[in-house]
Image 1: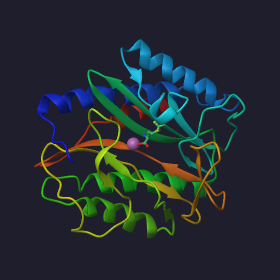
Image 2: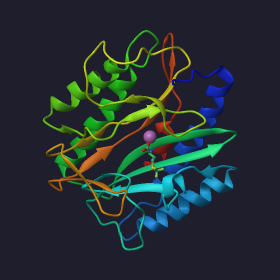
Image 3: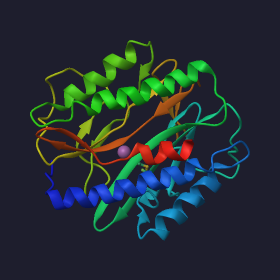
Image 4: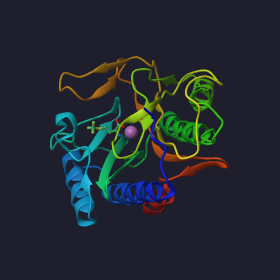
Length: 257
Ligand code: MF3
Ligand code: CO
């Protein structure tokens, strides 16, 4: 069941995603060699609560933290840990969700820790560009497959892998609503996009083979070949005139400069 949102509801989802963006910026300011992912999680949780929201991930199907922090070969859903200490050259994907005023916000960003290898920098840049290309297709009258194909075609032209086991999703009162938004597929296929739909578009892209493994902690997804992966996520409202992006990466990227 796909729920269409009113303008008022979209503004509340936007409020959540602006807070998610600000929280990601706060985390970004603390990313450096020597910091643990547990410390980054504490910073994020405090920031979210200080701004009148709760971390929607915490307790979601038993998930133990406020954020998912996935390092290098971890693709998504890495559990923050005091044993996981960032070092120069790592990449770290931070994915977090807020809940306030009855709605959820959900966005992600992949950060470099200091200087990273050129091939990994390119993986990050291509994954973010794939997100933008997918997002450009989020207009009323298109289909989910138009988003999926835009992401897949761009990413595969670089020889990267599109993870098949996980996908984007609708967003609203719940973190995961219909429709699913795969990062691979065919133009013109899948559910019709309508004015007022809110979806998360979230390419999860691998430098090597697309095959992933689900770790025994019940959450962490990593690449089978242990090569790095990147993950960026926007919440987007579908409009007649085109996408209305509810996440604000400029807040994050200002914090990086
Ligand atoms: N943004 C993530 C997703 O869409 C959030 C899930 S993490 C969880 O899958 F722990 F809350 F499940
Ligand atoms: Co999501």
